Length: 405
Ligand code: TRP
Ligand code: SF4
Image 1 (cartoon, rainbow, N blue to C red):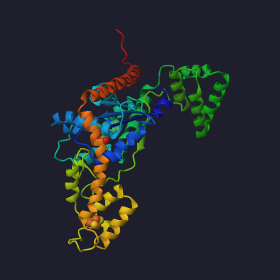
Image 2: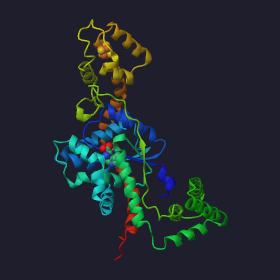
Image 3: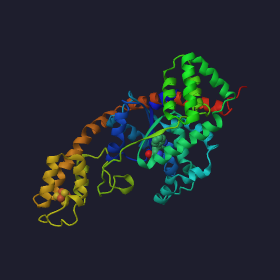
Image 4: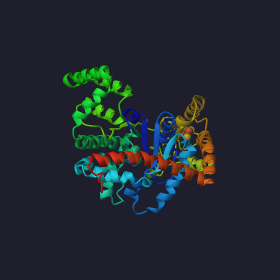
């Protein structure tokens, strides 16, 4: 696979640790639905990652995978546009994780900020395990095995993508130097033909001797156009431009998902660990019940007290769900005590129910046709395994593990 193809490939995963909620929908799934039409997308259930924290209750994971996949499909992620699979069904991730562990300093893992943070936050779980320390490296294997150039993540995961780049760089540095790399690269230069070869040589020199990054970009563009050299040679020439060896593992970039503004029922960000969620499967009655119980402006004790939407958690929902005229109705009615809080909550209840209704209908259809869902996952798994096997075989070769009997 070439660097150009890597740039078009997106990979992301989600841990199956419970019911998906509106935060997942607004923060992740809507973005995936859009990306699947713009990139070659791989989306997977990170069940091994769920095990790193929930190893005492592994039975819940299976049901969560199933519910999660149905929710993805119901939200509009499509098995035709994207490749959907379950991490543990592609055991190649585990082999790459093991091989990467040989070259990853323990101190790099200890320094990843989420390591100590999560141990603090999830204090009722014993996370002093080898598996939990290796969480970001397993994530690196997930990404690198598909040579994905782009990884859509929230701000909390950016450090894991940075870590992945460091691991890839170290791997390429250690194993990208084939025997006779420079000779092979020079031979590849000639295969491009006289004119292109001369241009490549000049641009490479301009970059290496004068640090001319524009020359580097032009040379890369030149390589992308070449049709008479093999992909292996192309990769060599990409590496040779910068003086290094062959690029075996692609350094990924984070595709930062804008922070979801989805508020929770208590005014904090919606999150399962805060117990402030509306799940994608809540019935209209459950939605109504949850919204009606929500706290409002604490200064508005009686119906006749005027309120202030700026300090009211419910108003955060109007920001997501209401149009200007409804928001104007709230602003005026609240500040003048013209409307009551229950009255104010009704349009939010209606809007959430309207958003979830069609999704829940699709979820019911998928649930009553489990074979269709299984087929989507098994076809996705096959596609994923093909791509993973390709990378792994190059990795084994680069590390000298391609033994012949
Ligand atoms: N750690 C990610 C999260 O908690 C899930 C994940 C696992 C992931 N592997 C990944 C995300 C690879 C992106 C790429 O959200
Ligand atoms: Fe909040 Fe609406 Fe009540 Fe004002 S009227 S306090 S915005 S719920």
